[in-house]
Amino acid sequence: MESIKRHNIKFKNKLSRFRGPSQFSSKTSLMILRNYPTPRKLLEEDREILYSLVSKWSKGRIKRETVDRLISLAEDSIGSPIDIDAIEIEIPFIIEEIFFLKKKIEEIEKKIDR
Picture 1 (cartoon, rainbow, N blue to C red):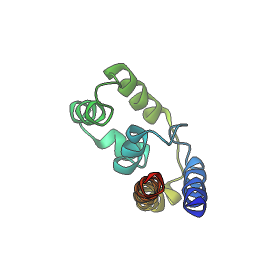
Picture 2: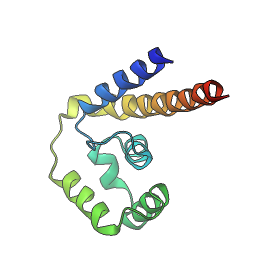
Picture 3: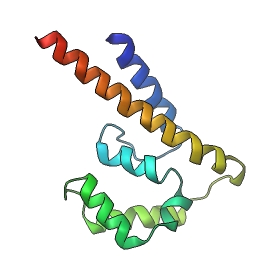
């Protein structure tokens, strides 16, 4: 189990180099990164759809003001066009691995608790 946790930390560290949300353990942050891995992808989404999805993922805890701030940050961001295509592919895979590892950790912890 310890190696799975280390593997999960390794992926979180890898994600941090993309300068996304600073807290990668929340489901909402991971879902945003999984679906909108770059500012460009985020800005391409309809604002009302984005509000709705973020509200759903956060169970209503994240409000429109926070989504507006995220959109504003995306508008002000600059990125290297050379890396964008690779990042748009890589981040969703990393997020899927994090979800997979979290699920495995939960399964192992349940077995240990028995």
